[in-house]
Image 1 (cartoon, one colour):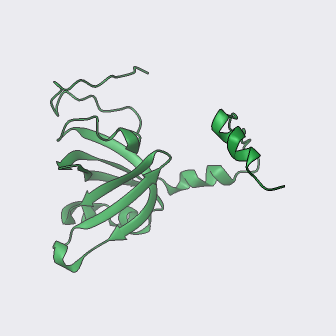
Image 2 (cartoon, helix red, strand yellow):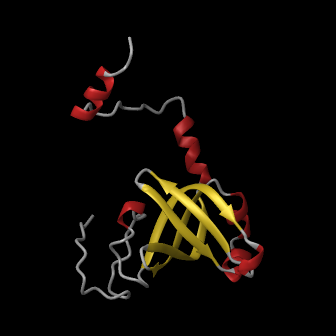
Length: 143
């Protein structure tokens, strides 16, 4: 896999689409209009009456949250995923409004089945490496 270091001269069509999902903490890197894929747990679904059929989703991954805009025609195509999905992958275009970043959905995939991997009995979970901050926090625990 190639590591890509973004540069300010990239245009939306020249921004490489990641082979996997972009972590939410890196959504400020692609230029406005760039096509990206993000994935995360659904925290919030909003369908305000004043939004003319637009649905707003908030997804969370291990690095932060992302705001997703789902227009009516996309909602009709991916309704089941938008309504019932617990874990979604969304491919769409970056939209910026001042400091707020949205992903305007083009494709919405329900990947909730991947959550089952977390519950498998044969899955081995490795403990996180202990860092200075975790050692300090551990020393503050009452005994």
